[in-house]
Image 1 (cartoon, rainbow, N blue to C red):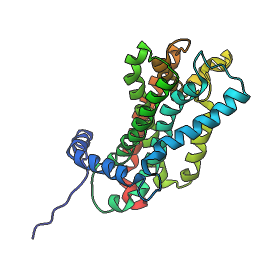
Image 2: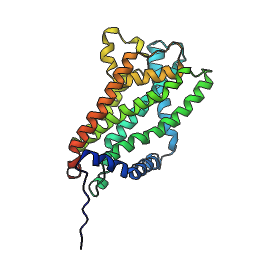
Image 3: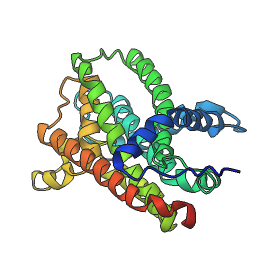
Length: 272
């Protein structure tokens, strides 16, 4: 009786071929996560709108009403919503991908497949919430009679940048979470803290010049400023330096994240 042994590709090129071979598993995991995300909830997919809307209300009160931050010539709720959209995608992707390997521990410990499929599918799943919320952004633009800027042609680039940043950080966190479960407590704090150091409820123009370089190292600064500039235009601007640094940072996060993930992937089934 012959014994069939399934093993991971030892060469890097073989591993990437395995990723393509398991593309159906990637689609299945993404579809499964979509189906169960709001299962047995009262309002279902409406949470995709409720969460960003509540965030918009709070940030508008804190930064717009109390902080008297400049709105760049746009209605403040609209300014905030354009910042909340990419940030909400980033935060959701981070939380979902960070926990993805632990959540799928039964699958990982039983069969071989490229483990990178798991956090990657979680990031793609988070796009569903983004698309639903983006539809409501169109409603707000009509309500406030705000025409879409011609800069909207650059929107796909900034969305791709958001996906890259989310994927890079998500891959790092998913690998770290397997070995160090402390990250279950660190990630929510990181997401909450990041909300206030990213230009979600304010414009980057309020950041003092001496802190700009450090501030631009946050990859979501270029993404959020670019997203807002693409939609609203007008007085809203995006620094070319922030876009360059965000792009470089996102690429570094993806490259180093994959490197660390591949380095530790062999022990996932034993540790998890």
